[in-house]
Image 1 (tube, rainbow, N blue to C red):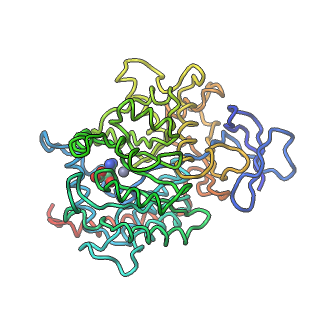
Image 2 (image 1 turned 30 degrees about the vertical axis):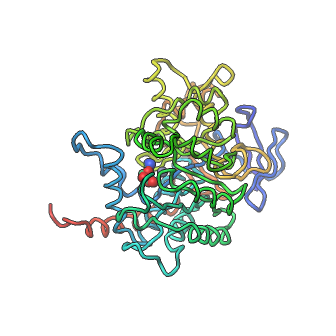
Length: 459
Ligand code: NGQ
Ligand code: ZN
């Protein structure tokens, strides 16, 4: 397939009349600004590399917006987690698939072309193993297949409830795995990989995985297999880690494994300056989830300083209170603005356009975290492309070099028109072709879950 984009964001900037040829295996085999080859399909608008979503817990989509209730001074990340745990109690495999499919349709329509699914729900509701231990992993993969999104599935290791604990708590019973069972699960999923469905490993957190188990997993899952881990999201876990190990979580992680470019450190909110420096040196990606981090009251990440020192980052929608890359990027930048009382902080003199910088950096960091290449429109990269409808009145008068700034900082509905994943159109004219059917199963699933809730049936 040969496409001729009116405009495209290339590593060198926005260029006009760009021909992109897509190979049969779903990768880009040529990008050129020369005279277009015969048979090119013209596409109006601005083509961008699709945005990888580097952190998702799909099932949490179903509680997004339902935990925004005052509950006294103790309403925190930890009390939100209790609400989430209560919801997890009831989920069946078909629910997990239905929720994931709907969420992934939303992602595609918002311009995410790939997702790293950080998956820690493994067992039956009573904590016993499924006959097939990959049952719930297959459910999230099924969701990805229904929607047509590219997915890096990250089965997650979870072994204890805190730094001092020997095991999980009852409400975490569906997550707990021994290291050997975890590695078998990963191996199963890896063997079943397909072009759009790959596997890596996740360690839930330094809280939930002891250092010896981290070392075992890293030895059994060598580079370039991607490794994702939650780190330093909450001050409380930093304090508990220091009390138990005399070190901060990221320090402990660096002492437990060789951290390099295949690692994605999710959140890293409370990283100390020396820890941020170590992440930059290692070439690891920081996985920012700005809307979830804001929603849960996590804290502030110094993205301006981190980016200025060459730190790599990408974005994730995590708990899915928002499913929109623009909102993640804008929230990250606005958190800096209200903190520093200045503007355009994430960008720099060499990359002055804040929106363009944030988009390109997050596309590159996300691609690295999903082991997908460089996150650019270039030969050899996956043909994951989104197209903005720059003919819309909303873009009138916006110079080409500011189109991405306008897209991100003055967002309007309908700006994103088409989405290509692995060379196949998954969204046309802003709509996923299977939206209605998938939304209908999501509705039915939520009705079933709500009616099974304790206290259901009351007004
Ligand atoms: C999670 N979510 O694993 O779903 C976590 C909460 C925890 C976020 N951190 C649970 N956003 O960290 O223990
Ligand atoms: Zn998470």
